[in-house]
Image 1 (cartoon, one colour):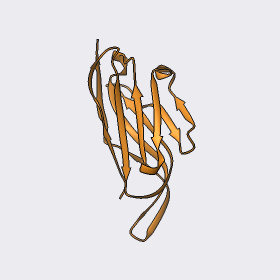
Image 2 (cartoon, one colour):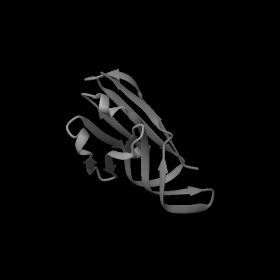
Image 3 (spheres, rainbow, N blue to C red):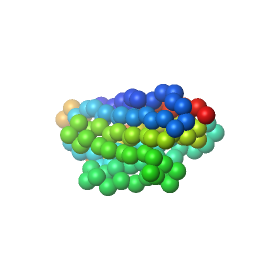
Image 4 (cartoon, rainbow, N blue to C red):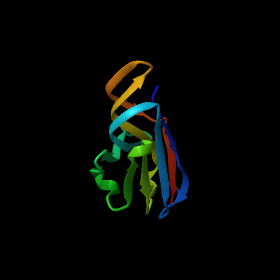
Length: 125
């Protein structure tokens, strides 16, 4: 069984910083990409930032220059450092792991995608 557990959300004033962490657990052999998405009330889920196993990154225009994604491949963990937070960054942030190769018992799986349960980030003005 693969699980993603997020931490680090909370309430912060505008201009402040937060760091989110997400650890993937289970019998995982590789993860192609890990990233963060967010969903604000009444809006669709959107990409925040994503990083491949090789370190290539992609950011939403709205967070470029303020957020930095990083990854610890050895521990299947992804982070996002969020600086200069704005009220419009308020959302539930979800961790995603894409293109996993893993096993459950003696059965191997490839190409699976998994999501965390979400962590609330609230930025007050």
